[in-house]
Every structure is written in structure tokens, then in C-alpha cells.
Amino acid sequence: MKPGGNDLAERQEEVSTPQEAQELHEDLEELKIIRDSVLEPLYA
Image (cartoon, rainbow, N blue to C red):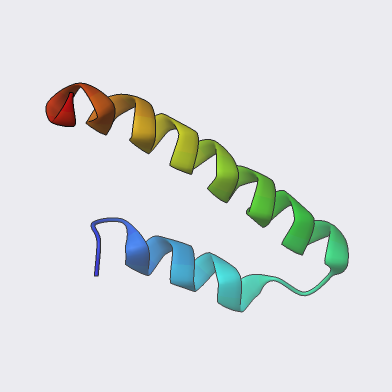
């Protein structure tokens, strides 16, 4: 599992409403963008 994965799993367990699920999804998408922008130079 990737670093930080446990935190995300814990947050997913706490989701109880569609609003919280949407916010979690948006946070995850932002993290993917950040991750890609950090990793891209390493593979360029």
C-alpha cells in the first residue's frame, strides 16, 4: 500500500453522507493531481 493509504482508508470508513463522499472524492482527485505533478519530473 502507498504511504498515506491508511489515512485515506480511515477517512472512507467515516463517510456517512453523500456530501462527505463527494468531498472525499474531490480531495482524492486533488491529491492525484499533486502526486502526478510531483512524480512527472522523475519520469520525464
